[in-house]
Length: 89
Image 1: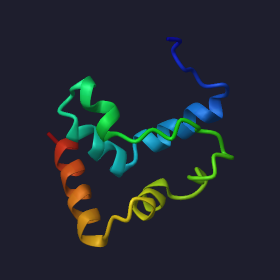
Image 2: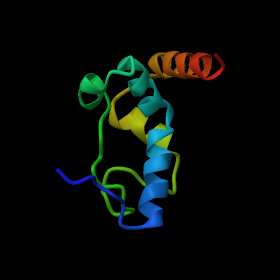
Image 3: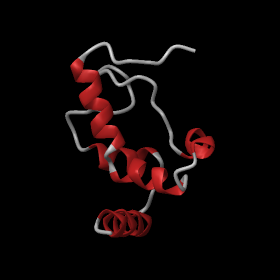
Image 4: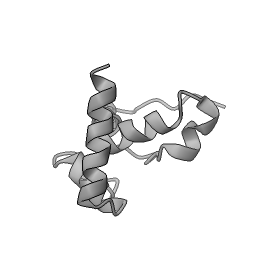
């Protein structure tokens, strides 16, 4: 199996925006650092180009992911609190 690399620096930057969003950072926390559960808990868009049709990387990625996954305000606050707590420990 070949390792997937990005075709452009822009794709890599888009992936970074995605991977550092609150929703995805929270999903990473759910894996308990277990690589076997990573694919089950952390959604992968597979396409990090600007034309992927799911995320507009020139806009707020957090807001788009919360909307995409149907995460309400209370759940958003919980995710934010957990990510912030883990970030500060």
